[in-house]
Length: 400
Image (cartoon, rainbow, N blue to C red; front, side, top):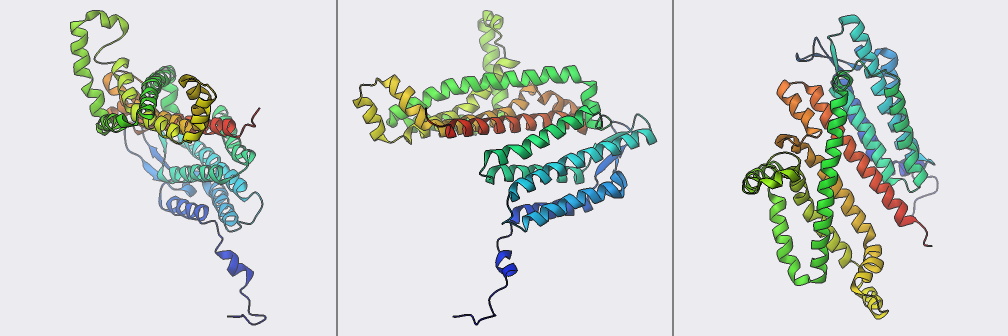
């Protein structure tokens, strides 16, 4: 039906359907949680539960108005999808939201320490975590949807530099989480290094064994079904149960052959943890290698064979370069998975960041639990971001 002159829909109504809904929804949820939940929690000491303080009580009218203004800016930018650099601006605002909320929490902790004494503990409340996670989600969404590499990297780099400057300034030193770290600084560095060693050794085992299994399944398709069925069984065993199941056989083995203990093999400690991590990484690595190699067109392989390439040359110079996107994604997913699973290694005496989590649970010290958990999450995020950047660099690099 033809619309009479002068009766066309208003531009605002037509553009309304193009609102970027996700940032708007995240901002609304963050605002609701901030208004309903405590921004920080003040306790008389490390073990007793505390009382929540609202954003206005903790940060004052100026701090509260600043955070609400940033949320408003994000909402306005979400309503203007045609704006140039919209996603970059939203990501920068999200980083500012995270940094300002952390700075205000540190300021509140300093004020409470002066007013109530050194034993007072100020923990981060539900309102803070909602704001921080909202900013993190907006940063991740902007990096995922922004097509330009500079647009992806700039907000993240600015946020990381701001976070480093905030930590170096000492403004967060009175937060309970920072105090837990200060008391255990050397132990924390030791367990962080142990966590990286366990993850790296488990990943190396999974890459070698899983890569060989995936290559075997590619070359002999008739064996792929039974092989993956066995790996599926291993993957269905609960992670904690697999760590525990390895204790008995390894203890018996070292009892029969005591010389194995000189090699570091024992029923508890790093060896069963590395073995369990390697077993958990077998299936994703094997499936990823098999899927990546199978995606290479058979005509390309036949052309390489017709040029006189050997089997090893075909794998190195044809299959792996063409399967590289899938192989890098497999590496990223496996590494992130193993970083999380390595937390459980502390239960069998292998150490790692899980040590702080289980110590905190035993002492009912929530911030000690957070010290281990947040560190593991940060490691996973760093690994994921680094491997995404590596994949972007390798796959978009111009051919020589």
